[in-house]
Each structure stands twice: as C-alpha cells, then as structure tokens.
Image 1 (cartoon, rainbow, N blue to C red):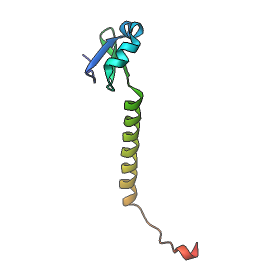
Image 2: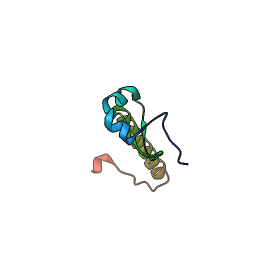
Image 3: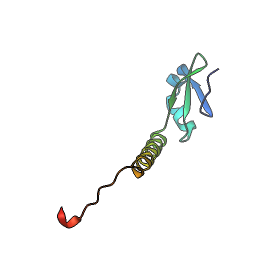
Image 4: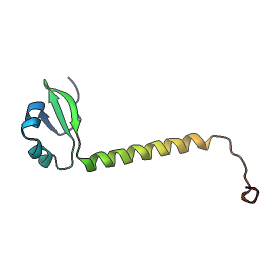
Amino acid sequence: MDTILSNMTVSVSELKNNFAKIIEQADDQPVAVLYHDRPEAYLLPAEHYERLMEHIEDLEDARLVRERMDGSFVEVDLDEL
C-alpha cells in the first residue's frame, strides 16, 4: 500500500463535489486526493505551497554554500577593479 503523507484524504469525486468545503476543512494543511484508494495528488493551500518553496530554496542555498566552501578562491583587490 502507498504511504499517504497527509492527515486528510478525499476521493477525486468528493473533491469535485465539495471543493470549497474541503479547502475550508484543510485549514492550511495538505490534502491527499485518492483515486482507487491510492494517493493520486496532493492539494496544498497557496500559503503552504509558498512556505514549502521557500524552504526548498533555503536548502538549495545551503547546499551551494557547502559546495563552494571547499572550492578555490581568488584574491581580489577592490582598488584594482
């Protein structure tokens, strides 16, 4: 069985029939959309998605910093630029 990464689940047909009510009940949490009792998609409120994207960007920035810490550095004199 597939792991469901949400506390709230709805079927595709339930989502079609009660979209506004489901969004309200989700209360800024993800909703797993099930098709034949398997997760087919996740519905995320906009604010939740934006926070998730910011977190991913922060992780990417941290990875770049770690990669560049071991790189070669070039000494630069600002007066010569």
